[in-house]
Image (cartoon, rainbow, N blue to C red; front, side, top):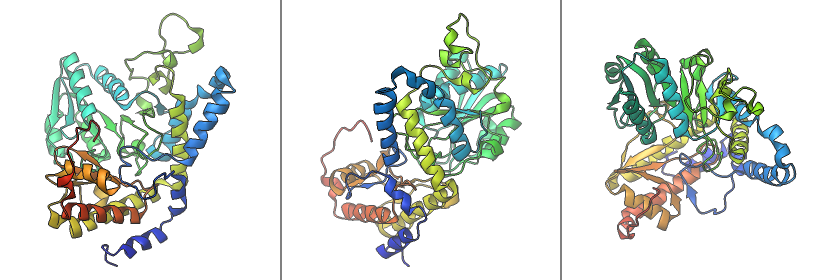
Length: 418
């Protein structure tokens, strides 16, 4: 059936094995079409119930006694992420701090482990916070900061990276590009970095929870990622850090805090780090965020990461088909890889007025996308929460809005968050 026929989307929903789990998402405005799951996942009933339990029973009734359970959450939730979403082994992932802080810790440890290195390497399409952290560390340590040009649609080029890796301490890349959704070859690029003596540091923020990740099989050394997108941990939920088991005795993160200290409550003098991933913890963890992540991981584990990946590819393929049929005549081009195997779970559409279109969709059409400058409209359906008819209806509203010029009549607003 032709994708432009809404019955096609209805048939896909009828056959969706994940359909029963869509009801786990809390939908307050039924007419609002949410296609920004790649920025913030929906609140789920499971997370809400768990938060209320944590507030009323654990904090309200248990008070400080609840720390007997809370104190293990960073490791327990890390192990759940490792098992169900990251393709890692027990004891290789902990949860705490923000992605930026974790990336700083991981990159610092990699630099310290390569004292003879003279550079850090990333690409110009890596997420901005990653680039800023690496640039700052390079300046601090007197290293070259090498930012390699990537194709804006297909992502990092191995030949260009190879030319920049001589003498590098670390190669830092995003597994899924935040702008285009391009999927990087984790195993291949990790091998390339190792051939040049560099460690690898992967940002998994736009991949985790939407697609299978194989940190063990790829040979990745270090990884970080957020949990408030596809994992649905909630706004500002803490991030995770992965360190390959074989490197844990060698790498030492630079922010020494009491949660990484042996015999923590002895409150003794001098820092003696834990001998395992607990050494990567710092201060008191964010309990509300951790319980949200734990419930989010459990829901995704029930769905199955392979089924989530299959649906994510189908949802984004529907966007591409409708964009070709409806939006190309209106000046849009697909700015993501067309092969679903080569992209994550969001699609970028390029248009000269993308910023105005995004604002008009929110203000006048009941569709929430996001905008990434200078000209990218991002559409991020979340496999655990988005129906095929949601995508169809959103693209239908988008084409009508642009065709009648509504985006040109919306008064520009200075919005800090796009």
